[in-house]
Image (tube, rainbow, N blue to C red):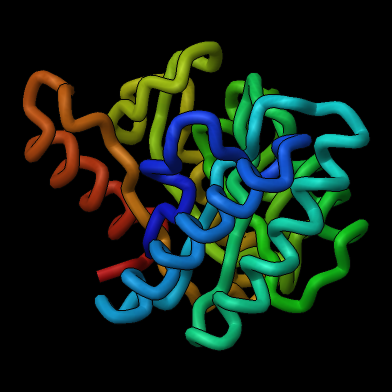
Length: 206
C-alpha cells in the first residue's frame, strides 16, 4: 500500500478552489500512484483535505474520480482514509461520501485507531463498508489522540479486535491488514512484534 497524499506540494490540494492548485495536487497523486504500481503495491490511499464545506467536498470528489481512473489503469485500488479533524472525520461520513461519488475504484481505508477516536464500532463499520472496504490499519490509542500505539497498549480490547476480525471474515475481505505503529515508540520493534503476535493469536494470521 502506498500513501498517495504524502508530499503534496505546498499550496496544492485536491479540493482547492484554485484549478491550478488542484491540478498540481492531482499530478502529484498520479505520480505517486505510478511509483506505487512500479513497486508492486496493490492499494493506494489518500488522507482527506481539511475543508468540510459542500463546495470543497464536491471539488474533492471530482479530483478523486480522476485519480481513481488512473489508479484503475495501474491495477491499484484507491482508498480514502477516514481521519478525525479533517473533512471526512468518521468512517460513516467517508462511506456516505464514497456512495455519493459512486466510482467503482474508490474504497474505504478503515483505521481502527481513528474509529476509537470517533467512537465508531469497528465490526459494525466493516459490515457497513462491505465490498467498499479496501484496506485496514491496526493501531491503538487513548481514544482521544492519534498515538499509533502497540495493540492493547491503549483502549483497544481483545474482544473488540476479535469482533473486528470476525467482521472481516464475514464480509469476505481478502486484502491486507497493516500494523501502523509510531516509529518513535520507546521500542518500536518490540511493539511491532507484540502487535503481530496479538494479531496472529486473535486473527488467526500466521
